[in-house]
Amino acid sequence: MSKIRDRTEDFKDAVRQSALAMGYNESKLTATMASFIIHKRRERSAFTKAALKTLESIQALEQFMRKHRKDYVDRLRTTEQERDSIEHEVTAFIKTCKEQIDILQVSITEEEKKLKGWLGLNADGSNVDTIAHKQGVVLILSEKLHSVTSQFDQLRAIRFQDAINRVTPRRKLNQSASSIPVDNSNGNVEFKESNEVPGELLRVQQHHLDDETRALQVELTSLLDAVQQTETKMVEMSALNHLISTHVLQQAQQIEHLYEQAVEATHNVQLGNKELAQAIQRNSSSRTFLVLFLFVLTFSILFLDWYS
Image (cartoon, rainbow, N blue to C red; front, side, top):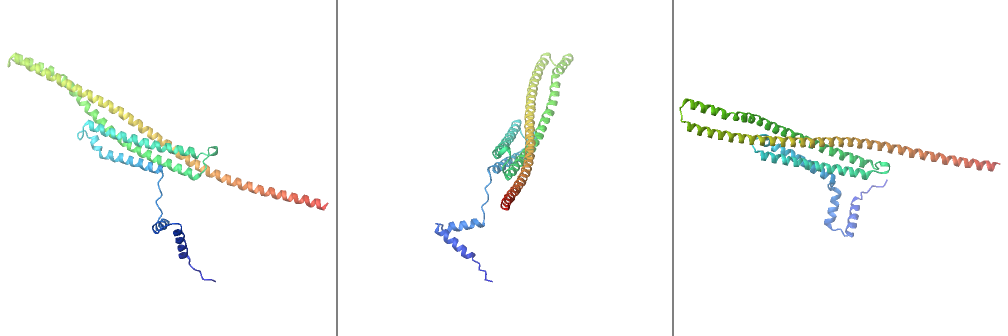
C-alpha cells in the first residue's frame, strides 16, 4: 500500500500563484483568504429593517409614557396645556407606529401577489414560509402597539375621572355663591333695624357685596364652561383613541387569520407536491409497462410470422 501524502500546502501554493498571476496583491489576497474563514454578517432585508424600526418606535412610545405617567395623571405637577401636549405627542407616536405597521402589511400583500403562480398556487414552499413568518412579525407588532395603546387609555380615563370630580364641587360652590346676596341683604336689614350704623354706609357695603358676588358668579361660570369644554374634548379624544385601538385590534385579528391561512396553504402545497411526485412515479411505471407490453407484442408477432 502506497504512503498517503498530504498535499494541502501544495494546493495553497498553487492557489496563491494563480491569484498573483490574476493581479491580486498581498493585502487583497489576505483579505480574500480571511473572508473564507470569517464570513461577513448577512445583510438584513428591507422588511426586517422596517420591522425593527417599528419595534423601536413602539418601545420609545412605551418609555415616553412611563416617563411622563405621573406628569399626565397628577394635575398638581403640570398644567392643562402640558398635559394636552403629552397627549398630542402620544397620539402622534401611535399614528406613526400604525402607519409603519400598515406599510409592512402592504409589502406582505404585494409579495403574496408576486408569488402567486399558475391556478393561484404558490410556486415555492420556502417563500410561503417566509410570508407566514412576516405575517407573524406584523401580528406581534400589532399586539404590542395595542397593549401600549390600552395603557394610555387607562391614563386618559384617570384624567377624565379627575376632571369630573373637579366639576362637581365647583357646581355646588356656584349654587352656594348665588345665595350670598340674599344673606347680605338680610344682614343689612338687621343692621338697619338695629340702627347700629348709618344707612348710607349700609347701602355702600351692600353695593360692594353685590358687585363682588356678581364677579364671583361670572368667574365661577367661566370656570364651569371651561371645565365642560375640556370634559367634552376629553370625551371626544377618548372615543377617537378607543376607535383607533379597536381598529388596531381588528387588524391584529385579521393578520392572525391570514397567518393561519398561510400556514394551511403551506401544508396544502406540501401535500400537493407529494401527490405530484406520486403521480409522476405512477406515470413512469405505466410508461415502462406499456413499452414492455409493446415490445413483447411485437416480438410475439415476429415469432409467429417466422414460425408460419
